[in-house]
Image (cartoon, rainbow, N blue to C red; front, top):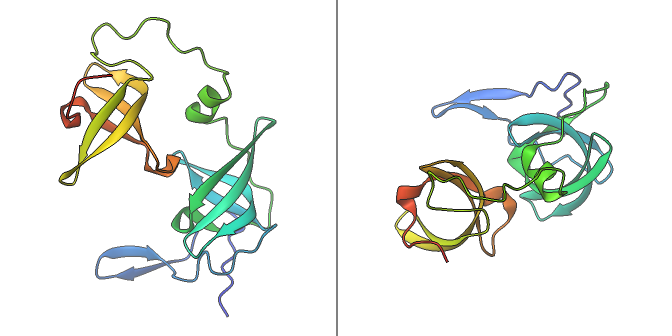
Length: 167
C-alpha cells in the first residue's frame, strides 16, 4: 500500500526516461480531511482535502492570512500529506484580487490594447477558445481565463496569441 507522507514538504521522486516524476501513488492515498501540501500559484501551501473530484482532482480548503479559500486542484499538484507544522502561504495575488483586496486599476495600462474584463479569443494548440482578460501584466502580456474552464487553465499569454480584438 502506498502512503506518501512529506513531513517537510519534500516529495518522493523517481527518475524515468522523461526525467524526474512523482510517484504514481501520490493522490491515490489522499482522504477527505487530510492536511496536504499543495503546489498552488507557484508556492507550496498547506490545505485540507474537502472533496475528491474523480481520480484526477481534489477540492482543497486553504487558509490564507485568515481568509478561507477553496479551489479544485489537479491531483499532480497535491504533493502529499504533512505531519509537522508547515508555514502558511501568503495570500496569492489572484485570490487577493478575487476577494476584492486589490484595487483594479481604473484606467488600463496605456501601453496595452487590453483591459481587465475584456473578452477575447485565444489561439491554443491549433484551436481558438473564448477567454477573458483577468490581468494586464505588460504591453504585450496578459493573464486570461478560458470561459467554461476551471481556473487551473488560466495562463499568461503574449498578446500575439489573441485572435481578435477586445469585446
